[in-house]
Length: 552
Image (cartoon, rainbow, N blue to C red; front, side):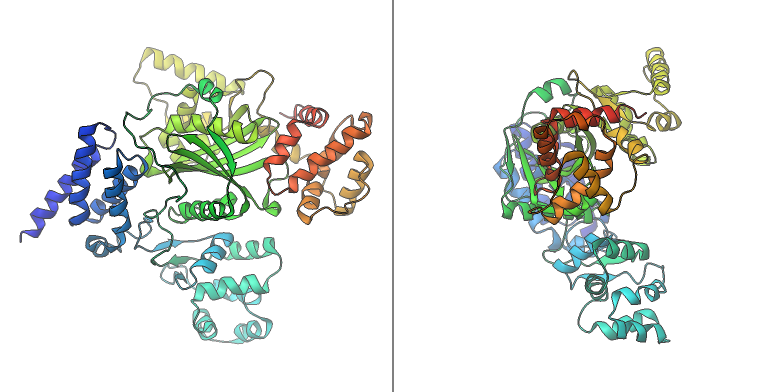
């Protein structure tokens, strides 16, 4: 009978620890350490309390006060999967990403393939999801060798029973995924077939399976927090003028670890992110901003790159803990930004992290003007509308170009002036979020990417032969001898753009030759080379800007 009051007392201890989250004084550090030591050893009364303890441990691990607090938080996370209260509430905590719990999700092809290769014994089909098994019948020709596929098509057994009779010691999901990988066509064909089927998976918990609990980068330097976090509005202009401490290409060991960490961050939150899923371990860069803050930028493998922009997914790392993620698409000294702070770490220093991201992007890719796509602002994104993302970025200095949106903003600002408690309705936020926002602080630097989709709809579709003929005729490239398949693919994807550029005929042979070097960099190991080489080629960059300037 005494256990229940004790557990309730432990819940009160947890609440006290949560209230100290943003307090960084010597006295608070002592209190945090004491409370952590109590909570790591005691049991909590509910699944929600267990989750709350997990989240505050993750928070403190990212922003530790001192070495005592760091060690206590690390200990709590390291042993979390063995907690008795976690086991008691494990079913309620499924899909939380907490170590020791299962994850149910319709993983897309690259993620399913990664999980099957790394944890083949833990990946299963979710047979209890209520979606049935008839979809498997459509998969036999691409998941099974021809003889087995023909037998399965003619069998009257239930699809999962057929699968179970063939898979032997493998799990059903790993047998299926590896079968597609072995039997189907190229990577794009496998992805298309798999994702059309939309299989439901469950990743069971294992000692080293993906979890938010163990998500840390071992290569991070640790900085203790002894002053309040930067929670106010950041000055983006000043932030852009202060460069990070260092930009380095990750070592093979660090690159592999960071790529796994990025994918884990998605799996454990029920998300898929193409740049991480198709990430290249050869194109990972670390921007060290100092004071325990770093950005890990991850480029895609060449065949999955965007045709024109250079795209990098990024993880935001606080003392090695992933606290946010997003993507930067860079072109012509401009960049389109997608930025997200993970739920656990909101209410901390989001504006500061965003400002430092812009400085990191400039250091890595040379970007000096920035745009935000509509989804990031709330377009078809309920989370963005609920969080008031549009006004968050407006207050930082981003502005719309569209005249209609400017009129809406003027009206909202007038209402706020009359009534400081006025807040834009979800309907108004939806209207504001339908088009890009821009921040272009440096003269003659512009964010060009929002104009690229319109241009893409106007360019011709070319065969490889046509693409080669156009590039040869316009730039004088007579042979691809010595070019890698990735370099050739990148060149051919850019051929419709080259066909549309004006004034190439007047370029000197040296300017055409150097333009070919720029285009070849699209298939280089590091895609950042393309955007940097393009920015350094006055004729090619000016011709692309002139073409984009015709778009609306």
